Image (tube, rainbow, N blue to C red; front, side):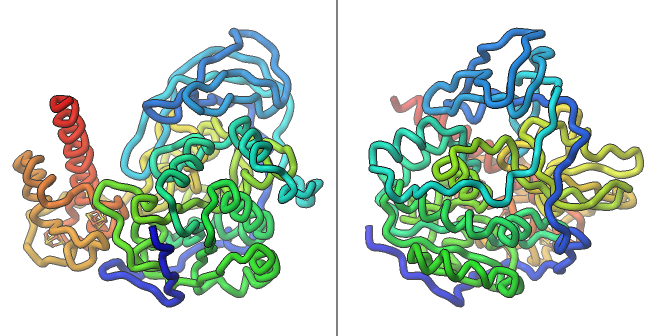
Length: 443
Ligand code: SF4
Ligand code: SF4
């Protein structure tokens, strides 16, 4: 496939300008959350990749010890700190449009989890041969949450098989309050850039780009040196939301259209997030397993706001718990309501407390067309809303509902307060299920 051409001032039709309301966390250094005592580490990544526990209740484990073996290229799971296995439970993994249940290993921590050291030892990873690099990738504890939660090795193989011509680190972070990627880029940006260079080498993709929001470029000036060293193009795109959605980013950056229901790799572009680049660098270059990721903790409830290095498996309601506010996983546009089972995973960029809005029931659609005008996937949202109300999944499928990126823009602009994002999301899942059943019938 021909390499996509990068458009430095690329944009897309639809979308909205969101307020740049980031609160106090924008300039606050990343901290460690020291009060974590219990974790529930999920065993499943997706329908095909899971891990089986190799520990028993009441067993003591030490930091870095393997506690579950991965299958189908899924990474093994390691104890993030010294701990005691207290049992096995079920947790909820929140995604962009869906939530998924997973079995989990429960741990009670007996030591604390520290912030990743700022200046780790840096062996020269570029001297690793191809076979050694591949071995390191497959042994690694990393999964890529973009495009369906894949183990890193499976993601690399998929990028190779699709002959992608461009690798992009998507650091666009546009939702109010969320600043986790920004702080990661400010404090560990050189390592993120090196991680991107490692992935470019592992996938054999000839061109790499680091895409950041134009309004934050001043904070990332120091990244010009490592980017130049590895021939990585830095691109600053406008803040129009939702370029943080990968398929929209690909359209803005390269003018290529991702086919509905497919991933950016099907358009020849592999997209990765900065947190995964950082984890890849720490693993490949420094032999360090990152047991968590940087997460924005903020919102209306009284608690310490900031960006914190939180371990995977920590319960979101152990971080914020408030009787007066609701707690969501992810940004305000697409966040999922947290319950007792929701835990931090590689996909968690924020845990926010939000003041519930006064009860205002939805009213019937007035056909203003705002949702369709602003939909970045160019969907006829009022017609899809009709399909939802009449349970017409086949109609929605023909109308291309699987192109929905779950950005939340339609609900945001709707004057009738209709929960359009949820409705279109449900139709999309039903359409995917119907297509899968059809394929099965044809086999
Ligand atoms: S229909 Fe989907 S892509 Fe379009 S605005 Fe709504 S959530 Fe976004
Ligand atoms: S924005 Fe709301 S009221 Fe307007 S057409 Fe869309 S669904 Fe109907």
